[in-house]
Amino acid sequence: VCCSNNIGTTRKSPVMSSVISENGNKVIKYVKGRGKINQELIERQSRAAESFAPPKNLNSLIEQLRELTREKRATISPIEIRCP
Image (cartoon, rainbow, N blue to C red; front, side, top):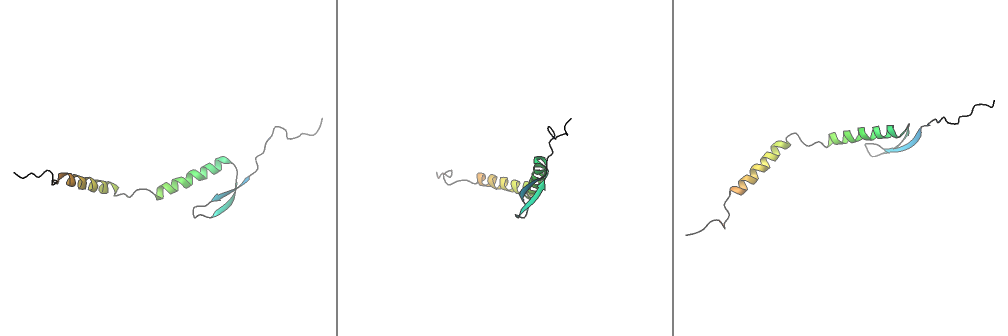
């Protein structure tokens, strides 16, 4: 019987991948596979979403804008004023 060959067995070697880091620099990393790349991408996106979260007082700003529009609607326009 001949020596065993590696037919049918696949071994994934680490792949070199260039990634843009958070500060904009290009970094070359050894990545095990697409799953690892996706995991890093999801983590980076979640950190970016947290940094761009709307301000906590956004509701009060919206209420102020609504009141301003109500006040504008309450004013009488010159067309509505009729002289006898």
